[in-house]
Image (cartoon, rainbow, N blue to C red; front, side):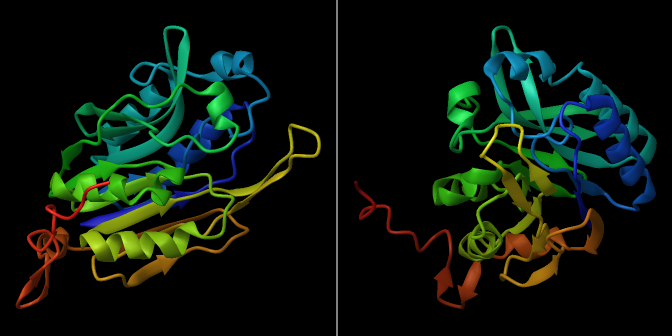
Length: 263
């Protein structure tokens, strides 16, 4: 299958502008699966929970979701996108999976980073695996990379591709996701953003780009630069992620010593 990421530089608060820019990029790609960054439609640095609530949308019927559903149907593709999700009086840092037949699944970020804890509700969805064409995919978001349990849970549930919408500011994640791919023998697609936001004086955030696609063996199939918007499509074979053998006598799943994994 043809897997892709789109590395963007959203304008904070300009939902229609950011969504339409992403839609235009998706339509230019010949891809079966496209991953967009975390909070791709709003930008990242919210000044308050009130501002977050004003800009967040329903994950199924909001402007971003509607346009991505229309685009997925038109392109006959699957799309993973991170957005600010509103449900009742709460807002979540969420990721949605959309396909040619419409909305498929939702994941709410389990591990909130830094000031996200002050405004977002902690994620309450389990790590699920979904069918996306010829592959099984799971979602995690940005800072989830620090917690190996997230990727391992998805792998144990059968994920062949882990899709990771991100707004990375720490430099470690791209290398760490190579390890996540190796230790679970899965493909990983990290879609990050570029640019700087300083909506809170003295708290500038510089996003590192470096969106990438990694093979189950840890091979870096492609990594973007750290300054410019960029899209990349890579041909992958999900079958590669079904082979969990490291050597003829070592299987990454069967060799786990669960009897010793006690806290």
